[in-house]
Amino acid sequence: CSGLACDARDAAGEWWLPSERREGKRAVDRRAAEFLREVQYETLEGHCQAPLVVSHSHFIRGLFKRYRDAADVTTKPFSVKKLANCGVVAVDVVFDDAAGGAPSMRNPRLLFGSALEGDGESDESSEDESGSRLERAKNF
Image (cartoon, helix red, strand yellow):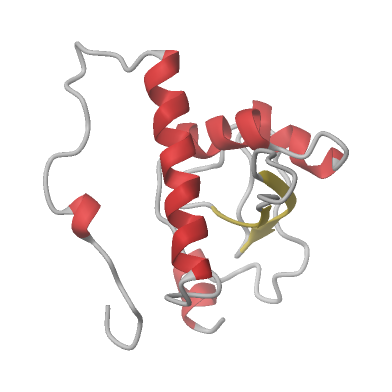
């Protein structure tokens, strides 16, 4: 993690369940809520302004299903389609503690030529469509 504040504690050990055990909906709901509380804490405490998270596409889709801002129509595809392998999405997460509401995810943007599985569209703002995502990310 050279030059970046990096917390890899949750990736140090085997964190996933064995294939014969499936996590139930309530457990996923708890994990999603805990994850967003951690993101909120890290930003409020000044540890980071824009956290970079590496996760599984199904978990990302689940976050959008649970916390997308329904008024933001751009969030709907992220709640029903899977982010392609090695895909990158930027999203604004709004925490409204004053109103006691749940966080909401708004304004998702696909980056570095990423796509949602099955839609065949890539990030139009990427300048170098012929290069690999990794190369574009290095030059970001």
